[in-house]
Image (cartoon, rainbow, N blue to C red; front, side):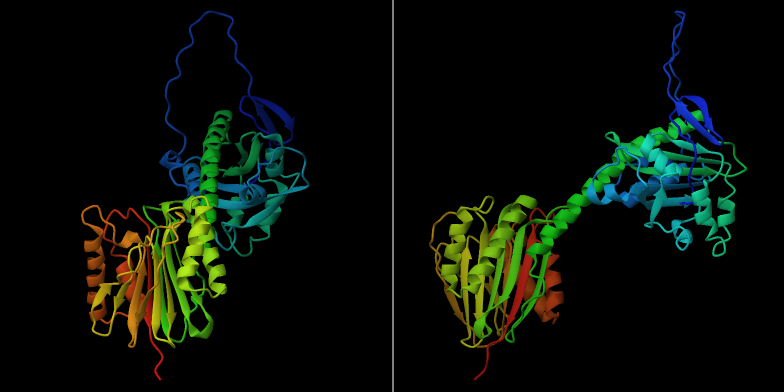
Length: 473
């Protein structure tokens, strides 16, 4: 931002310290008489209504934007907000010392009523700057007090002047009459700072105004910390979700794949659903869709463990039923994995067979060459994983002509208003209707995935379509 300061401030009485610099510190007020103290009268905020929405969004960029919009142009001519890189990356505050320099990222900027994009070339949002210890920024972080200057400090002036040839507006920014830097503090440490400047047409910042900015900065610090925590959790959730996806789909010559997944609820990122596609020897392909109970990181971590186990077991090239039995045994010893369900399929285009094993999961659908889709009746009870039941029997389908196999999670067929058999039939009918429209496989997948039976979206939805093409002699 074009703003930087030179005055050590803490609200209260003014004490001159050096030329052009003032320190404000709070002093307790005492009364020598018994005159009742009048109740303070409410006064209108010196900031714009944007101050009222600070903290309403769990987004660092939006929170920073709300802060600078609260300050500019009503309170000052230009405002910027910086966050320490160490805090943004490592979640640690700056708690003292005398660093040779500090690194801070410009999170938000506003000059007058200009849009931040209009300053993108000169003062881009997101730019990381290094501030030496003699700058008011570093002093604000070290001292923990606001810094008030009569002009932009030398370091900032030199940096801005270097861009004056590219942007004539820089000259106006250098005509600063009053410059204020207020640290953003959180739990005894600093996480960044706010810089404000006023030009020659305005009066200097007063003590009460500095206190008002400090109060705004305290509220902004809490909001920024909430947003940063949320973003950290979101990144963690995304990392977990991405680990549940198979990455590059391992399609075989006789198997084309389309897939998709939607988490439950508004703003959810992860749940217990997962799927995978694995190439096997002799052109075989293994496909699996699984679902752990509940939502959130616990369910997702359980499914990560089960998915990893399936990959390991598939590498042993054991029969499908044995694979699910071993997965059942592993789930019984895995926290959060008990009562997980899955459907495992192994397609062998050479022998024209598809072997299916279910563990408490809704039955797959198969659309044959006659254009009719129906659920596959599976052998055995197929109890959920983790019960150490061991009663898993294979169902072998002989497929002599191209067919479409549909594996899905129960989020696509569970409804508060209808039984699951009715909803499975509805999904099969929806597939037949979409297929008549000759939708390509990815479009067909999206169409089915975004038409859940329960409009409230109470459960995760996962869909895996496999177009099976047997080899011809």
